[in-house]
Structure formats: structure tokens, C-alpha cells
Image (cartoon, rainbow, N blue to C red):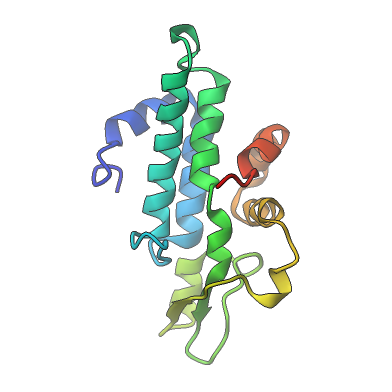
Amino acid sequence: MLRKLRIASLARLMFRMWPVTEQLTEDLAAHIGLHIAHPSGRAFLEEAIANGFSEMLATQASLPDEEKFSEEVRVAYMRGLLRHVSLILEAQVHGANGELWDALNDGPLPQWMEQHSPARIEVASELPEHLESYRPDALAAALLNQILDRSTRRELLPILPRLTAYAD
């Protein structure tokens, strides 16, 4: 997918410099796969990765040379990657017997779809009713809690508010 987005070389460099960016990207990919569509028409994961690199490059362009590989650039990639992560919660995945996948509790979507095959995905125009009262940043943080392993959560905890800040 990184080759398709024409960012494979840049991704290798970034992942080598900041391993947590690779872990976050891999964990998000493992949780949703390529099954959920983004409103743009691309797979949500593709759009998220493209947003991450776009935000990272825009941040780099705004910084002086000595800060091109600063913490702010690393945070920009992760913030872009997670910018619309709460949209995952709008996906309604129905199993063969009517079960509904819960992104906050049911584990990775690819495995869930395999266990509840044939599954179908519908994208609602809004969040499920029981989640409507939550702010997007709180939903993003809850989803990250489900997706990330303990050590990655611990590493990202100090900057979590910067990663999940909803800005559109």
C-alpha cells in the first residue's frame, strides 16, 4: 500500500527514525484492514496514511532546517494518521447472524469478519446513538486504547491529547 501511495521510501526512513510511528500504523492496519471505506472513496487506512504523510510534510515545510526532524514532525504524522479515526465507529459491520462489530470492544475487524462470515459493511452517516454524546477526541482515545499494545500506549500517553485533537 505504501508503494501505491508513492511514499514507501519516506515511510521506511520515518519508521526507522521513529519506531512508534510504524507501530501505530501497523496496529491501526491490523485493527481495521482495508475493509472500511473513507468518505473520499479510498480505503480508510489508505486515506489515514496519506493524511499522516501530508500533515508531516506540511509541518516540515513550515519549520527551519534544524527542526525538520523534530518531535513536532513525528507528532504531525501521527495526528494526521488519526485525524478521522472516529469515522471507524460509523462503520456498521454486520455478521451473518445479525451481530454488529463494535470497534471499541470486539477486536480486529479482519478476524471478526472471518468469524462472522459472510459479513457486510455499511457506513452510517453518523455515529451510533450510544456514542453520540462523546467528543471525537474522546472516541479516538478510546479506540486507540483498544488498538494499541500496552508499551505503545505508554509511549504515546504524554502526547495523546495532541494526537487525538479534532481539527477540521
